[in-house]
Image (cartoon, rainbow, N blue to C red; front, side, top):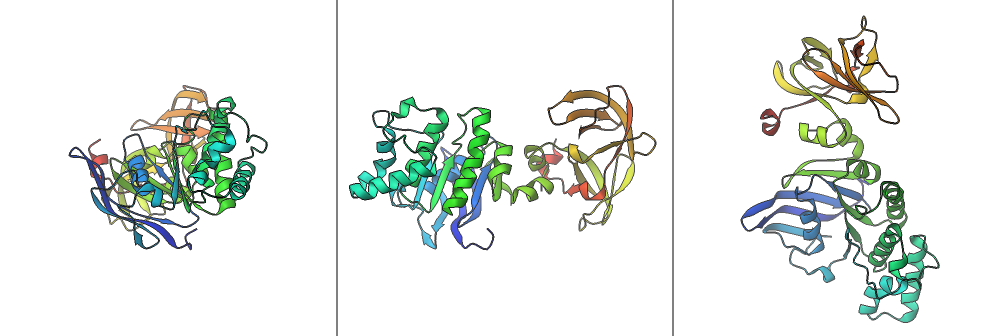
Length: 353
């Protein structure tokens, strides 16, 4: 995906509502054929960013560039993008076929071309034979597919999706995540997806853009974001993390919990304060006599595929995920390999906590 040319460029985008800044100096490239997810908590600015790209909002400052052309003030209907919202906004008085064909009829296409495109879309979303049905007779998942088909039938170069799976139950949402990713790969068009669901972002995306309080905090592949978060906020928001204060003694050596640990990070300087991040699944429970750390199991929860244990080592209580359960009250050892110790510079926001 990284070899594809840039399609959309947000240049120094800021947005204010009644004097309140909701986006602050956003810079972002989106490439052709890429599945990009804007991820963050409610109110972080991700939907506003999507709406600015779609033309439903105009930035207070900055430019939106599409294939080298400034489209900042271009209205939505003149942009080569289509949008699918969480509320599908299907027309209840029209059947499935007419809902999908609505935009094509506005463009005054021929009946034959409309029929061809609608049939193609019904096949794409696995709803062949549903054309004459009332949209109100369809399930939530089927309605969501119709909304996507209606957006795709116009053959946009970019599809914007604003939390389109939010109204679905968990099982259907997971099925639709895989369907959407498969659809995007088959069509070869750019998807820009908004969600607050970390698992959803990790499952579908080529690139994740983590946002908070109107700022972009980190951009990267799902693996990069998960394995190498740049701040405590990202580490906590993407998955679960143990974050403890430490001191970078020198390159590849960090001190925390009254011990020196080998790590793989460098470039932080010597004897500087850092945040140490260790994912719960990266801590190994071993015998008390051989652990780098020793502690007492304070609680145990069964999570389906693993046990979640809270282990108190005196100066810190570690969250540990393991397929092997140790009973509450037992003493255990904890070990971690250097590759699974991630070092971050503390941010001002993190230092205040």
